[in-house]
Length: 261
Image (cartoon, rainbow, N blue to C red; front, side, top):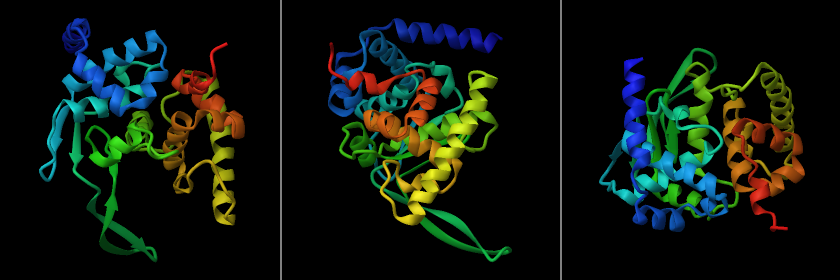
């Protein structure tokens, strides 16, 4: 109780401070999605960015510099996901590790039941429950500047963080707003995941990246990327999936892209 009081008091002070003009420029240059937000949504995002940058531990790896551009670019993309939620959804994210490029990490591969092979895998990012979110800086920039049609590394890894709030492991189901939502989520996501697996096995073209066919957790992360990167196409081609994600995130990004009437 006392910790929550101090935390909320500290957050109010952070939110009350003027949003730095230099940060506005960074977001304008590096996080193109924000230009489509309404004024209340943009103010909410900026408020969350102030808290996010101050509360997380930032560390550069292999000589990667940590400066305002890095912190604000990551924070703005992470907070874009929760414009309709609140900053408390990221309370368990403790630190952000930034690499200057893609990196390799040790990994165990299980072969034939009990045989475990040690190796290394090349990665752009990863997310850990109550641990760091690890990101490649060039890919953070590429996603924020919308250089890739569907991919956004920050959206992907922070979707995993939301997913893991349900108990520490990513299973494709973040905390639901109600039991009815949970039933709807299970029905829609199970069907959409199965459809993606079928399309990827048969070589059929898909709006969703086939990496989402790996498992339910990756499906949710890939679907989140597509929901925010290609919302109009997702709503047209996968209306139930779009509606389900819109209800969870409490956002309607497709509408932001429609011409004003």
